[in-house]
Length: 74
Image 1 (spheres, rainbow, N blue to C red):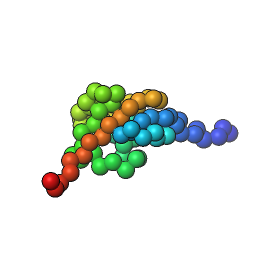
Image 2: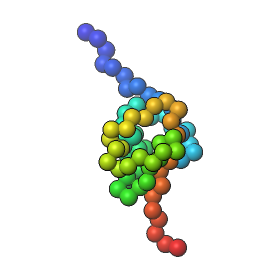
Image 3: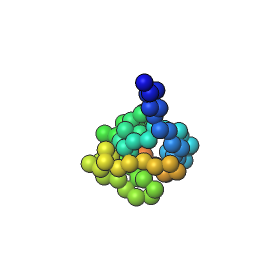
């Protein structure tokens, strides 16, 4: 009987901060980090990622992710 597979963890940069995350889709990674993607704009390596593509876009080690969320007030 083999041991269960361990999650593959990778290092990425999210909003300028280093993060070690489980490899997966961009949407999954950001939700694991606590981001609400309902109204957020997301860029991966300086390229905008449309909301419809968050679950099919794979994150790789060394990727730079930017998440911009609207803020109320003024």
